[in-house]
Length: 456
Ligand code: PFF
Image 1 (cartoon, helix red, strand yellow):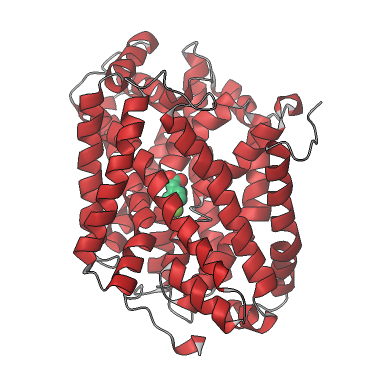
Image 2 (cartoon, protein in one colour):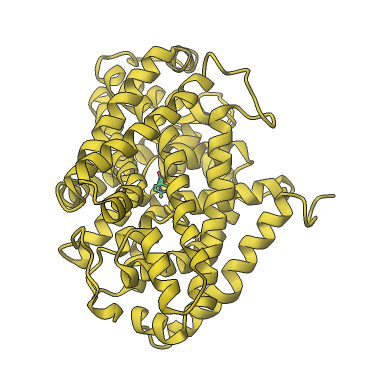
């Protein structure tokens, strides 16, 4: 019976440890680097509103489903899906959900590591005083110089991948719990400090209006898809990362309560990052649509001006690096666990093999900012393509499949037994059967042009 199944990879020491690890996975570059530039490029308020709606109506129920499937299966996502499908008398094809997730994890990690490398480079630049009294123009040049140098990017990308591989090879219980316990509160504090600085800079309300005044004329099918994709990305949903962390969750922990906590924290971090960044953008006469370089061009200006900016700035990039690290770990974990389960591979080899594969793919992203900047497919560089394909296609489709399995393929008894909710079970079941899958399908089909709402 599912009740007695245990994971061969270990278990979190408590519900709290799971919250920490899953928050570590969710909170990362997606909140602090990606959310602000996506909001900036896609018109602000309306994007943010759709994003928040997706978090509540799609992200929350699907995250509960993903944790639930993981805890019931207690294996890597591929094997979990195979076991659960068999138990429910469903097709073995469901295991491909796990496979899709493993591939999405590699794709994401490949570029995630490159961007995490930028935060390392920025840590050293900040503490070295590069940004003392810096202007917007010089900050822009520093960023341009970094990304136009393939060797530097490759070096940082390599270092980050090694760091990630080392932790995964030691197993999830070691180190991860402890570092997140300290990291999350510290990141929160420094973000609040930055928001405080932004408040003192005159353009604070302009930033607030940009983030929260919804101008619906800015919404298009593609913007809605991007907002939904961002909701999946930021919550680490749709690829098995949360499923595998769920597989290490003690049986007596409440899935609903833990999930809710994680979702709220993740959303708060993203909104705080937005509130810190946009006032500085407008206060320095910049525009919001700076793209992937946004935080790297904007935050150094603030650190260069504020008292003790070198210390706070250094701390900020260091914490961001940790946040990226705890997310990257969860990107390899599903694949590494599968190699251990199915190929009897030792965890160290499994982690190294996964890290190397992702590293190799990441070279494409490194080059897309310089030597291959002009090489495009569908008008997208290698990095853009990886990002679009994972956030806007693979994760939503993975999430849709999770919702369909949990809501339709799995028996009511099984999900009720695992979730152990009373009244709110009906709400969850309604959301996971009807609301989440229908919304994901509509947004997706509309964006690829099969449907045509709001396309003029
Ligand atoms: N949620 C992470 C972030 O916001 O940075 C990124 C991520 C991690 C996405 C793990 C997907 C995943 F499986």
